[in-house]
Amino acid sequence: NTASILTRRNGFRRQEQSVYYLPIFIVDSGSPSLSSTNTLTIRVCDCDAEGIAQTCNAEAYALPAGLSTGALIAILACILTLLVLILLIVTMRRRKKEPLIFDEERDIRENIVRYDDEGGGEEDTEAFDMAALRNLNVIRDTKTRRDVTPEIQFLSRPTFKSIPDNVIFREFIWERLKEADVDPGAPPYDSLQTYAFEGNGSVAESLSSLDSISSNSDQNYDYLSDWGPRFKRLADMYGTGQESLYS
Image (cartoon, rainbow, N blue to C red):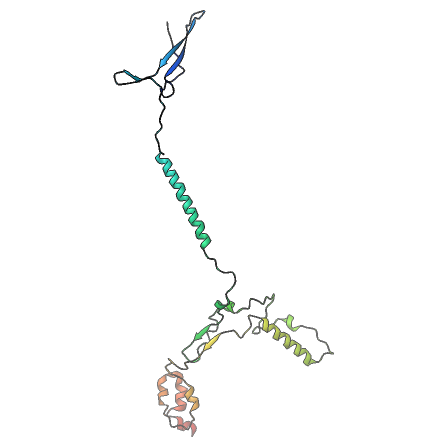
């Protein structure tokens, strides 16, 4: 004879209830098979180490109070994220943007260039930005310049025999004058150049005194020969050979 036991319950908990009624169904393998059904009453009790029952009443299962460590970390992370977002929004609102209206006081269109040598500045007339000198209120599709030879289309215009020549030239000059007035790229360019120190810092100093003194002066110009080959012609004219030159 063989027997097998099949249970459909995995355990009993005293916190749920103290008494359990377990149905038992017994079947044999004979032909015909015989069966029997009974009910087993089970009482769950709390026992000590020696197996003596202490209490058999149902007790409520008390969960530990408070939050777990993971829950606390998640809550703190959410709070920090909200604080960072609030600070970012406040910072973006307080940030001052640049005004869209151009400040005329800051529109400096002059370029002051100081030179300490005589004749300085002739080769430095393009050291500034010409875009700052353009008139933004004037918008033209085509631009003409006075320092550039005009194209053929400006010179080819119909002439009438009935109109005097002086009227045609006057109209031509008047049109060119209007074009030059509205052309931001036409010279003269707006550049302030100061020449306050004539000859200062130069080895030869100022040469204006050579023109102011007459040829009959008794001044000695022998020092011109010490200035080098560039002043050799002046040294020959005003030096020791002056008497033979004007004799």
